[in-house]
Image (cartoon, rainbow, N blue to C red; front, side, top):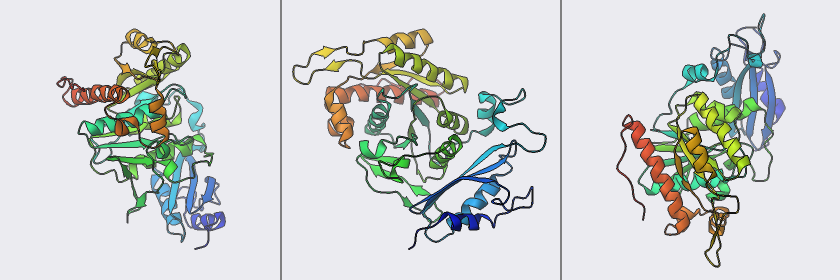
Length: 377
């Protein structure tokens, strides 16, 4: 089948009429950021500030028109209310009457059918091993008897395919929903399943937010006790989209013991608190180095900084994860240590973290009542 072209996509979009102007969305300058590659199509539908919710049917109509084209395998249509309408300021100017993050979250949050709880694993900066923690946490929760899914929300640097050893692409249902790929008993979804590993994703912020929204809601997750979301580093569009669109049960903040990492961890914690997402606590990754030859522990990046920060900020300290070559090797090899070496000391550290998170989830479901302690030997 011949490759779909941008011209074909634009011709299909010209059949969709903007009800406000009476013009088609292409002629009206409402389509931007169009990309076409190997049957996958993405674009932004720009509408006037304040018209976002009302124009959702228009976005859906654009998406459906393109999806019907022969050769199209996936469509990401993002609606962004950024174009100033008559007498309006730009949506992102943050006017005096603009709702803050808390108000926006309260207005738009909705649950995902079949998912009992969603937790975010986040960090204020990159390079702290957040994805390694997220993957092993998900596997740890699964070993504790939970039905678990994991969403790799890092659009620019997806790592889930490599860490879970997944090379295939997700199937699509008749109603155009993606089916997560299951590995080690965990339902997995990542933008990395849809693009080549070495291909750069060059998207503007609204497209990132839209893609994340679709990976949450246009995926047939099935029945899950918990969905672990591996967030991209920082406090940008992806974090705010997740916090404002779905009811997060809580967030786990990952940091190393270094002062510079802890400064960014505090920013991440403050962001979640500002949008009223419970913070389960801070976990100190790379807490100490275990020599693979002699077994001696060395505090390469310092030690105890995350525990001290948690105490100062009034949140829980969730534990220490060592820096060990086996964790790196198993993650790079597609068989994370909780799955491939469950009896190792390093896997026990992740299982302790999973037990802490399971306890927090239980307490939240019971209105604050603590669950019995889970002892991992």
